[in-house]
View 1 (cartoon, rainbow, N blue to C red):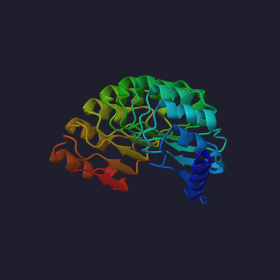
View 2: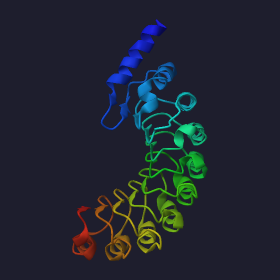
View 3: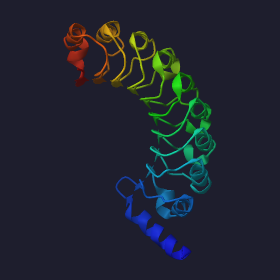
View 4: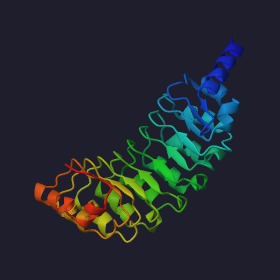
Amino acid sequence: MENNLIEKLSALAKSRFQDSDQSLDLENRVANNETLKILCLTEEFQNARQIFLSENNLDDSAIEVLCEHLKGEKLESLYLNNNKITDRGVELLSQSALSKNLTCLMLEANKIGPVGAKFIAESASFHNLETLFLDNNPITAEGVESVANSKQLARLKNLHLDSTGMGDKGVLAIANSPAMERLEKLYLCSNHIGDEGAIALCSSPYIKNLKALSVWRNEIRDEGGKAIAESQNFGKLERLYMSLNLIDRPVRKIIRQSELSARLKTLVMD
């Protein structure tokens, strides 16, 4: 029976592996920890540059299996979104050799709090990260502050923080941190951000290299909208997403007629 399972999972790994980008897509394919352990031992798993493990109900015990059996010598991107990972799972990842070569870590829609965000921020294992997804995790402003002030995440360029409960306080942490000056993409949707947060980004001495900014579905009003239209920080901005805020029509018109709007490749606004 066990040999049959091993053969079945080996065949699965082979069928889900893409030679073109060295990716292994196992989304919604991992039944339990024993399945994961066997998959980890396959050649495809060990050699993959990208591994997709989304929507598998993986919990912290599964992360322990992953860290124990995956060397990750070639692994660059790890997608663990829509699982059941908590701060403990993040702690395990932060201590694991498999994380050392990661440039992209996707943890969207798990159960990670501010403690988990702090594990990421303080771990030398994540020093190569360029893209980090923490959307839909209750890390709050406290967790965002840890990430924003991290000395380990020196290569971070793309930061996804939609629906993290950060509020204006979290935006202020990003805006006031010199560690965030390399950011090129920043996603802050659905965070109850108001004018204070918007103005902080617009006047930040560090946030000047953004190519994409999303503040969709927040609570930005006219003052924040005007600050965005007039900011000198967005000279490199190409895409701006700001629908579903509380900006009145006259100010939206100002934004559409601004120099910023003329430079943008994409502007999404009510």
